[in-house]
Length: 104
Image (cartoon, rainbow, N blue to C red; front, side):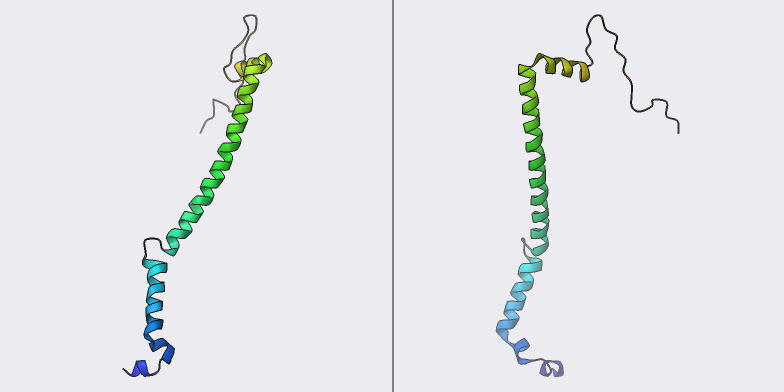
């Protein structure tokens, strides 16, 4: 009891104690506490960055699809580069960028 006599009056006030308990519960013990809110904000930021990336990727793919529909040269380029197709009178040589005989 001697300890309580040295405390200032505002620390012994029942309203201050109730408010402090409420703040502790809301900031640390609640379902939507401060740490949860921070992690959700970080996740939101990551999702916004992903959305921006995929929106740009989608626009690029739409542009490429339109080019493939309208340009025979673009279609031939895709067939040669991605699908490794060739004309009947051509030989196709594939050069790998990574050496296959890498020894450990």
